[in-house]
Image 1 (spheres, rainbow, N blue to C red):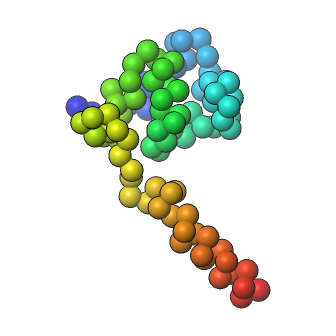
Image 2: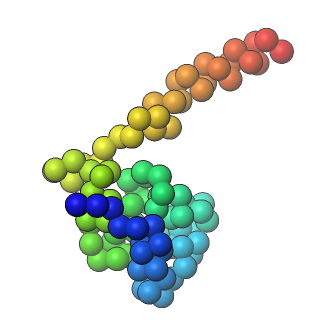
Length: 96
């Protein structure tokens, strides 16, 4: 099974009568959240997209979910980068 093409996801959302930006804002996210989640794993926003489309996120992005419908964490996910990023930021501040 393959992921939906990003343009198909965008078109499907628009066909429901809402823009990607408006869907993001109405869900309480930044204006570009839906656009980002179409290309980069973001399970909370994927849930919003899937709900709007009347399906499940693992149907749209099977590569992002395990066989039980749990989101997979991609290598380099921002949660994995936070400690390193915080450390690097702190080292830069100390060097200044």
